[in-house]
View 1 (tube, rainbow, N blue to C red):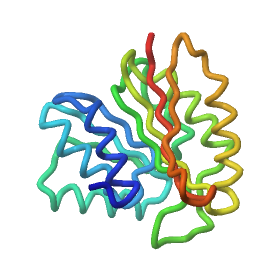
View 2 (view 1 turned 45 degrees about the vertical axis):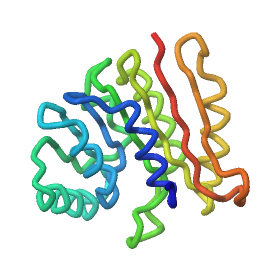
View 3 (view 1 turned 120 degrees about the vertical axis):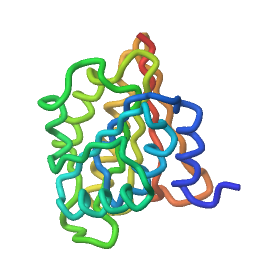
Length: 186
């Protein structure tokens, strides 16, 4: 049974994950998604995690090491800089968890300007048949602005190249988080 959005997202990701895949988590946060992904891509898989906050990188590193995982690289950088770090067609999956780091400073949040740059880069970094997963949190001021922007942006992606799907709860408030999936077709 799916009780939380995270459980649902992991369920959806399971349909895309394969042994040996290359994954980028552009906003690692506390490392919950990183642990799930590292465990499921296998030892031959490769996980790269980025976060602007060193505390997020440290928490994720501890979490992954305690889980006995070693198939990861963590970098303390802003997600808007991924185009400087990787070549085109590098990743099978790129994931984002927008907003702020839970249990830390809520003033440090993703922004439209940086997310726009990062997602435009992600479109180049994702391989054919790969997926970009974006969890959007419109429940705070910057999150609402980001949500409005990302919906307009994603609706304008070329349908011959990308499939875009929004998954949300219909019986909850409009400020509830939702998942956006972008699949690269060619």
